[in-house]
Length: 197
Image (cartoon, rainbow, N blue to C red; front, side, top):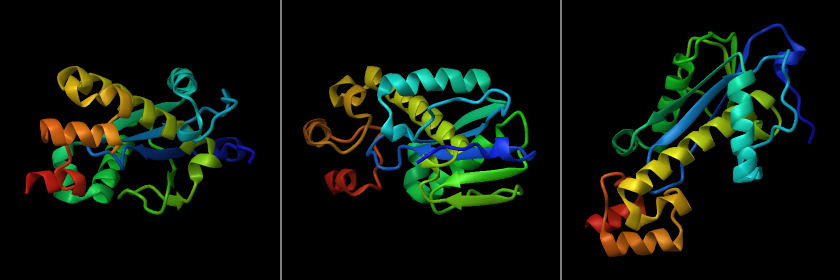
């Protein structure tokens, strides 16, 4: 499917928003908001899940350099457990939007739901595959969260967050059973919650 930039088709300032880390058992959920510069298009943008780690890192640098504005924000583990993962994700998205140095005139969000905002917003299913602004947000959210999980790996090396980034892999579940639940695990998620009973 061919990419297009809505910024390039209109004079309005479009902001793409996407998240990373809804499924993991540990760590925060991240969200990014990006307003691309139509004068500096970025060729080859794609959904972060379809790019290699090296490709994501390369694009993240380019996006931060060329975008008119960008922001990454988080909802912490405690907020995920208190609110639920959907509401925590929307909170992270709202924080990313509010942290932008430029206010957009339209917000396009990947998925089914939009964060609370005074700016006209639209949710687009699979938007990270078709809208360049959302794809850019997807890449920034993913790379930022991955880096955070690498930092958490240094604090909790026996869980090997550097490898699985907190996702419920067989290796992660094994270490959870062996070492128990850490302060950065999501206690409301079933595999973790069951270990607390």
